[in-house]
Amino acid sequence: MNSHTVYLVLDLIGTFAFALSGAVAARQRRLDLFGIAAVSFMVACGGGILRDVCIGAIPPTGLSNWRYLAVSLLASALVIVAYAPVRRMRHPVLFFDAIGLGLFAVSGAQKALVFSHSAELAMLMGIVSAVGGGVMRDVLLSRVPSILDREIYASAALVGAGVQVGFFYAGWTDWWTPWFATFACVALRLASLRFGWGLPVFGKPRAAEGPDGE
Image (cartoon, rainbow, N blue to C red; front, side, top):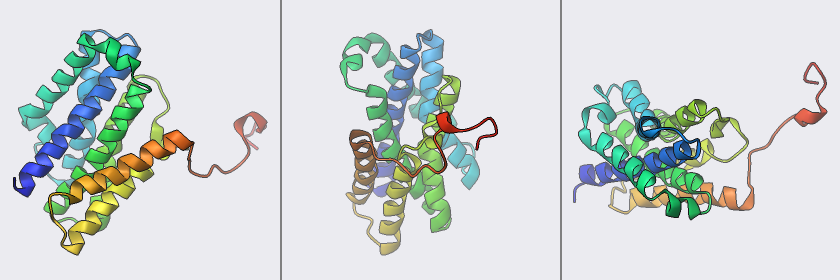
C-alpha cells in the first residue's frame, strides 16, 4: 500500500467518523431525512473543502470524488437505521467527533505538505480540516462551536497536525506515522473530556460580570 492510498483511506475513515457525528447530532435534533444527510455531509466534508480551497486543490476533493458523498450517505443511513444502539453509546457525537478530529488533522496537514506548503501552513490547514465541519454543524444546530469554548479541541488538532509535520520533516514516512499522529490527537481530546481538562479562562465568571462586562 503506497502513501497516497494510506492517506486516502485515512481521509475516508475520518469522513465516515465525522459524518456519523453529524448524523447523530442531526437525529438528536429530530431533523428530517434531508436534514440528517445535509448536516452529515457538511460535517464530513466542510473542513476538507475549506482546506482544498485555501491550498489551491481545485476542485475540492469532497466535491469531485464520489467516495466522500457515498461515505457520508452511508453514515447517515446507518444512524437512521440503527439509531437505538448508537444512542446507547456514551456521548456518541463526542466520540465520533474525536476520531474524525484526529484523522482530519493529520490528513489535512499531509495534503498541505504534498502541495509544497510550509510547516506552519500545513499545521493550520490540519486544524481547518479538523474543526471546519464541526463548526458548521454547531452553527446549523444553534450550538456554541467547540473551538470557542474552553475545551481542548482545536489545540488537540494542532498536536496531531504538529506530530505529522514533525515526522515529515524528520523523514519518517512509514505507514505507522499518520496513525501515531492521529492517536496523539484523539487521545488528548478524549482524555480532556474524561478528566475535564480545559484551556485557561481569563476574567470573572459571566454571572459575576456587571452590565458593562466588568
